Image (cartoon, rainbow, N blue to C red; front, side, top):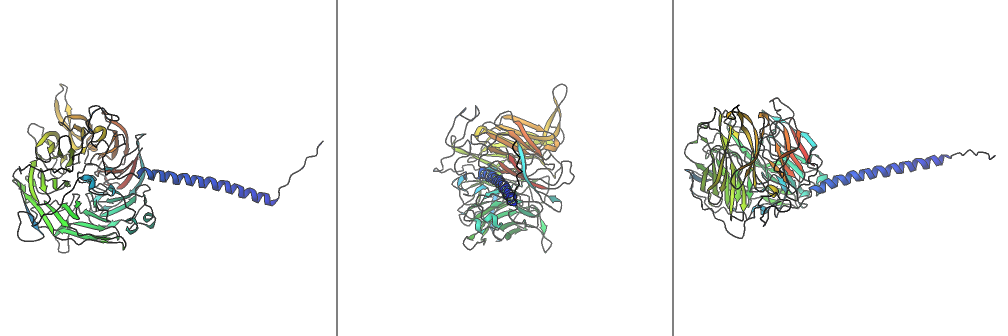
Length: 619
């Protein structure tokens, strides 16, 4: 019988074993960390999209129906030949007259003292920055998304969120409240007032979000990390900011309310914010007595900047054209502006209100300007679309829209027709004959932008309101591309939802929200989705597209829901939704698969809740 040998282990063996186990664990952890890092960079690479300088999905020099990835009956519009000149021939002003003043001179000039020299070749050369840098991305105001998305699961997932504050009666983000999403140029990054880690990260996308609590917030789109401390402005910021389209680190944003200055006068200002020092560089505005509505001069509209000239409308009924004279030295890391002449455009017309008389038409601009070449298109609170020559500042024509219009006009080129179209949508503030008490019409129009002729006009029943809040279409329409290039999508607040009696007749209307897709050709309703009263819309519809042109609609409502629809199916199937628990008045913006939106700090029942900013991934 063999004798069993008892094996003994020396201490050095246990030391070796411990080291071996530690090595294995270390390799596993490093591998896991590498996977996490890889996944984060992979996610980041999904956002690293090319500059959309050519055609968006469904655009380009192609026409046809039923092609690959394209719904039957859809006709893709061609772009205009920008080597040609396009002249506005419309001249009917519908009783409106305009005048111009430079700075605070006593003399009111009938035309600008000099040619302004403001003209665009087309929307694609407005900026070479990557991202969404102004309301609607560009001078046509036709998209709230940059690049394309890859959508497989058709679900929504919150990737990060951040609580923000309150100032007076206002919290969170308001209307229009669209964030900016920008990927800075590598040569600019070292000069920015961001954290050191971001100065060395060329592929990060910065979220810039002015809020109603008086602060401007900054985040990393991918991680939600704070890229810089909030910049306090001290007055509620309701609208959407604009970045310098030449890529220089200067931000422009306006106050949504009036406040008293040192002399006790109610004033409102527009701010130039230095993104190197993270301080307000310059402010202008105040109480402008050139405005017919001088008692209220807030700035909800989002400006455009062309040839270093700021074009900024105000609620006082003035459009300011301010030569900025920007100086940027990337080597020294400095930027400044030294504004020159402030050329002011104003208008007047029959029954316009000079004394805040609600029974008359109000002066003022709350919509943002859209621009083609040297032609500016803007809607006013009295219910007109105005076409203005930006070089001479002459009003060329005006179209009656039927009511106060806050929604921004959207432009669309049509190469086949050889012209440009503008789409508008009004609110409801007048009781309509033949409708029950409290109901009127919001009106949508497709207008030939070069002639001022109305192509089609459609009325939608909406609640008149009580004077302080107007229903109808406050949200900016979306001009479809890709597989929905035949559609115009609109979101309504206070839409009249018909109540049908036993005989099948409409007996009354209930208050609700409505998403409607109109055929661009003739205004025919293609589909319509009604919601209850708490789920109406002032947030503009956001549509993201895949490389194939498939379209996904994100509709944020005042019940706090973010709804994702497959807009390419024709049946508008609800794919997914998130309940954020607070009203959403702001318009979201998207970069690739990621969108950002803020809430108001009010629950659907009107009680207070924490105002938040969310980043949501479409999967």
